[in-house]
Amino acid sequence: MLEEQIPLRWQESYDNAGLAVGDPEAEVTTVLVALDATEEVVEEALEVGAQMVVTHHPIIFQPLRRLTAATPQQRAIAKAIAGGVALYAAHTNLDSAPTEGISHLLGRRLGLKEECLLEPSSKEEGVGIGIVGTLPEPVECEVFLRRIQSELGVRALRHSAIRQKNLQRVAICSGSGGSLIPQAERAGADLYLAADFKYHDFVDADRMILVDAGHFETEICAIDILFELLSKKIHTFAVRKSARCENPVRYMV
Image 1 (tube, rainbow, N blue to C red):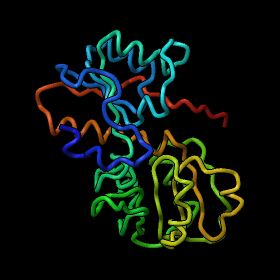
Image 2 (cartoon, rainbow, N blue to C red):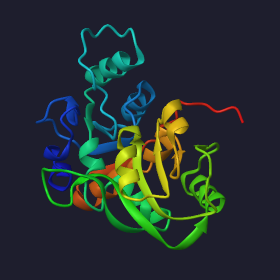
Image 3 (cartoon, rainbow, N blue to C red):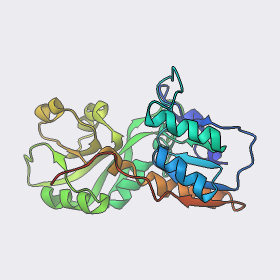
């Protein structure tokens, strides 16, 4: 099934991809795809009759000490258990997937010719986090920033100082990418697109432009990837995209 295309062995050691809630032997006829298994998404699954929610982010990332419905996470899990809805996540194993990974898709949308992985995995050839690619020709930095805004539907971009007129080599890591700044620099990237950069990441930025487009914004396309993988692989049940997958971050612009 899904694990044949994006196996769990591709996930990072700190991750918790796979089935987190539910009976692995239960029958499934309808799947709802979302970025997060929020309380609203689980309620939507119950309303549309979906027996499984497949997300990018695992609902259980850190160990749970109790399940008392005291938090949105706990309420979502409790509702899923009560309603017989399984919760499954394809997280860093999807990030690491060759060609189907989120960073690969972002690169194609932004017009990059992919050259290499930003952080290759030692597990298998072609598996790794992030990509590095080049544009067909140099582009003015501000023009490319506007392209990122348009393609990702971003209302506000955080970025470091623009110290050059044009750029051509770009590194991308969907989601949190601060730890891979050194790899992007070593790859000779003119611009590094990711999310969740810290203040001092911007302070220390030199030639390379850091662009923080938002965690949700750089990963929401995971829904499209998962929907396509499930729809192509299994024709015996319905796959639906969640209508209640919302960005938890609000902007005042």
